Amino acid sequence: QQQVKQSPQSLIVQKGGISIINCAYENTAFDYFPWYQQFPGKGPALLIAIRPDVSEKKEGRFTISFNKSAKQFSLHIMDSQPGDSATYFCAASPGNTGKLIFGQGTTLQVKP
Amino acid sequence: DAGVTQSPTHLIKTRGQQVTLRCSPISGHKSVSWYQQVLGQGPQFIFQYYEKEERGRGNFPDRFSARQFPNYSSELNVNALLLGDSALYLCASSLVLYNEQFFGPGTRLTVL
Image (cartoon, rainbow over all chains, first blue to last red; front, top):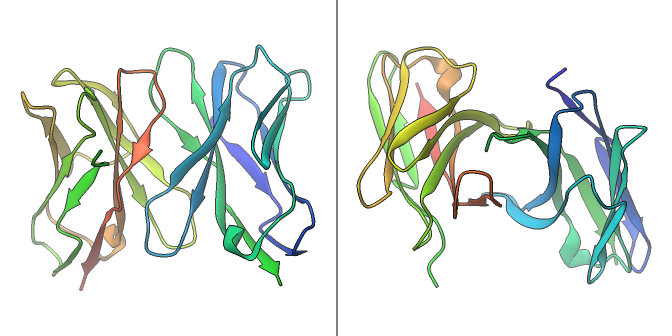
């Protein structure tokens, strides 16, 4: 019940295309859902985050869509660029804790 | 502004040895969390500290311990190292307990 399931494991997108990564959870106590981007040899960098009181949040080319009833959330990267090639992790945090539970990661490759 | 800093960058130890990893949070941040990231997987929560008190512990053996100092920096100690402890150890800081977490570059620990 503490798991966050992420898909796909890997993704190849053409430059300018839309990258979509999905995550699903079971624990209804989760109330904070961030996405992180990680380059090889680096720590994860916070991209964008959402709480369950909104269904969508957009920051630049990055959008989180959140479906509370389905217990799913997704990251959309619009106009994908080769510099977006990295591993992306979704995460979730139970209410009243600072603990982040991460998905398994998606390796994104954006082809020029 | 300086981000989260961690030292050392890399570390090589042998089985049975002990290791201490260090983390300095972003200035003004009072909470520090530790995560273990095995190659190809998402980070796994180890500990969270806030105002020098342990506020969360993940599913790790008692060989793992941590503490937070009055200046909010933190140390993670691992005793009796096993080969399976080889991983990237990440420190994340947040302003308060339930806020956004910002990760450092990590310490790469190799156990031979």
